[in-house]
Image 1 (cartoon, rainbow, N blue to C red):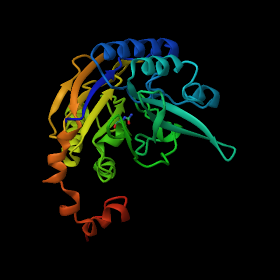
Image 2 (image 1 turned 90 degrees about the vertical axis):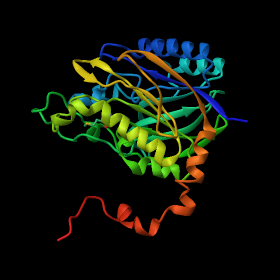
Image 3 (image 1 turned 180 degrees about the vertical axis):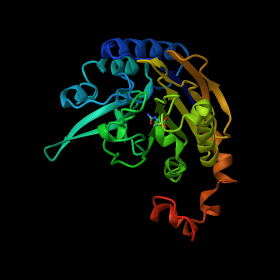
Image 4 (image 1 turned 45 degrees about the vertical axis):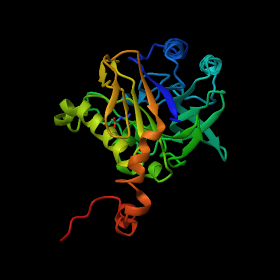
Length: 311
Ligand code: CDT
């Protein structure tokens, strides 16, 4: 019997700085309600889904920075989302800024959780590939200060057995790196969930701006195909505080084909029925890792960070 998961990619339109979490959660509840009507089992929300994409601003006041972080999950503001999802028997992926304490030290991550339909948090991920820069660069039209506000994630890329399948998570810039998918592929992942906030304009390389959606598709479609897994990529998008974030939230099959895609740059639910067994013929044939991979020839990938050209 096919293992079907009906997935809702819950794209969010822009969140302005003055939009409080209560207002954002109400928008998410509306998408969850639509998901219920479509019979969804799983809803995927974007990266940093509860606030505006704050790394676009240089901030020095730690109190101001911390106002964008969650210290507990569920929080007071997200509790209605957890409750409604549980009532609807829907699991969800949620991206948020996480502030935690270990050994008396505050730590801040760009994080996501996977919540099962019974309301239990079954998976946690902390973003590993943090793009942008760590210092103020006033020449930019806007900043991208993820390297300032977050630590590199310390949990690796896990894969969790839930909802009748094997689910993995990553966050935004992670989706551009083949290593992200492969680490999950080597754990047999069947569906990769990824939220993103992608400014169309990247100040150091404006020549890429017109290719933003193409690159978004290119990396997620190849990640899906090369690992025989579904990929569900979900944007926060539109004009946020004067900065355009791309949309094009997509549900991609293990064949690499886009099954469903958002049409707007606003709140929009994109739904697809996903057969988790569709990845099998890829995993058992062209990408049968146990038969065809040659890890002894991949050593440079873990031994070397930056490219070193031959003399
Ligand atoms: N949020 C995030 O990771 N955005 C990056 C922007 C890269 S340009 C600095 C992305 O890869 O989409």
